[in-house]
Image (cartoon, rainbow, N blue to C red; front, side):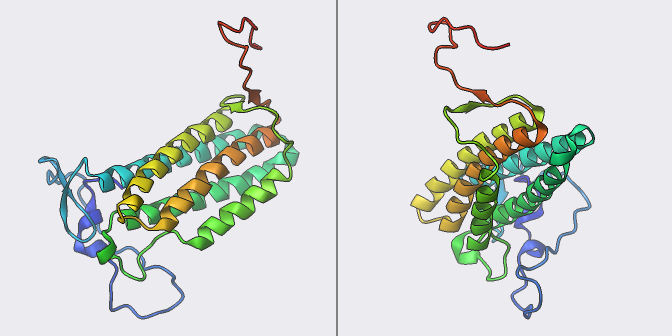
Length: 237
């Protein structure tokens, strides 16, 4: 989902003549046989509708940040896969579930990128996007995970395991993507569901970071204001 890929070509726009069927969204119609095109060398790129816009346009910044987030969710999922052989047996199956969830989120983020790369007037009814269904599922998954976790008595710091840290990094980039999307929405250029989805996803990444720590049996690092130079309390090793 780079700003120089085939996102703006006609082949990527959903076919308005396609009849219904089992699919909710139109399948992509893309052929990529050359990665570099030199078309972006002038600092411009194309949206799905074919419009040329500067690469620093707010819309490009928004879906570019969603692309960055997708890569970080993929990195967290890969960390999870590599941790599985050494995970406690009682937590391994639930980590597998989390891995499936993270992969689903990657698909959802690409769907989100599709709609963000399209001006509202060019959106096709079957174009991939995020909807209330994705938001509802994130909330249900957070509720299930929260039932396994003790209440927090302080804020948490990223750390304790590589997976916990990766999920926190993804969370912070998700917040940035949300801020970008809010700017678009305030100007009337973004679907409100996109903002709501990113808001819930950032919350979910926080919950999943805590859940991963519990499943791996690794400690959570709690914020201690006095574990600072001025506070004088030595932080734990």
